[in-house]
Image 1 (tube, rainbow, N blue to C red):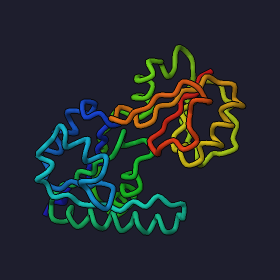
Image 2: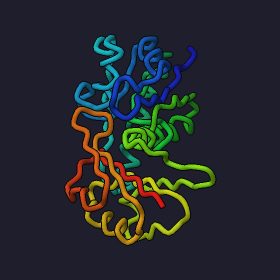
Image 3: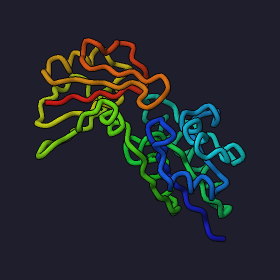
Image 4: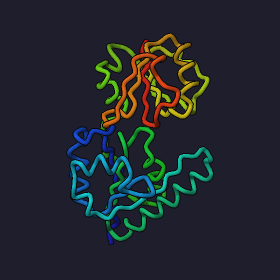
Length: 227
């Protein structure tokens, strides 16, 4: 029997209208949809996708547990479990469409599973979505980069204490849990700072300076720091 394909599919930043036609097509054409979370219908990715692909309600929804912890050994074990779960469907000849927020190549939970799937000989395919930082820049109505500027995308929580001293503009992702420290780094950089919280979602908030940003900003907070 021919094995199925595992698709990592980006559903965009939050607004269902920002989903791609290809993402919707894959949902409609396949019966097994995996989502990162214990309760698939409670995940943000599901709520985005079902708004434009209501047939998602009748698909086989597979919960994939993705703990937000820093213990790499424990995380790796969970990723291996997730890969084996998906492989069970692929072995039946079924494709698995794994829905993920934003883009499937930017700090995506599917990436970790993808490595194990490919090591075990399974075929994977990535389908891009609109990234959170492109959506945030559009919401702020500012270009991310112009002319010869560089763009640095930084997972802020993993790079605390580093100076923002490279030429070009910065995108700081994964900032929320250490926002007070991140804000201090931003102040010292002397850059123009903007942030969008819950970009393109109903509870979206926009901040146009470091001082406006709350220390208790939510998980989906993205900072843009320009020269």
